[in-house]
Length: 103
Image 1 (cartoon, rainbow, N blue to C red):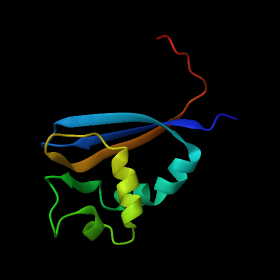
Image 2: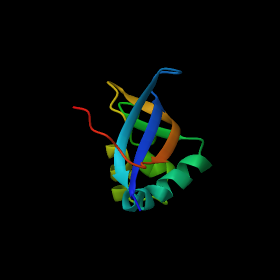
Image 3: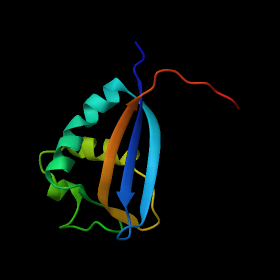
Image 4: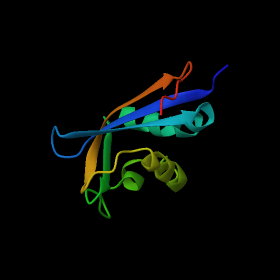
């Protein structure tokens, strides 16, 4: 069985301006990130990152159930936006059945 997945994270960085990042990950990574996905769903995706976060408005304060490691691991897979972003619009995974490399 193939244990590769595509993790697709779409963020809102400027009130309806979106960026998306697609990364191939293993099932083990998704299992580690699962608590983050649950927390995001419960809070409608609020996730200040980059210049959007400060001492009182940041993922550690919004999601005290998450560890610093979980927050950092999740942010590794998020798109990089010039000034950060404020909301995770969607997190979607696709199991990779196979792949062809053309170049």
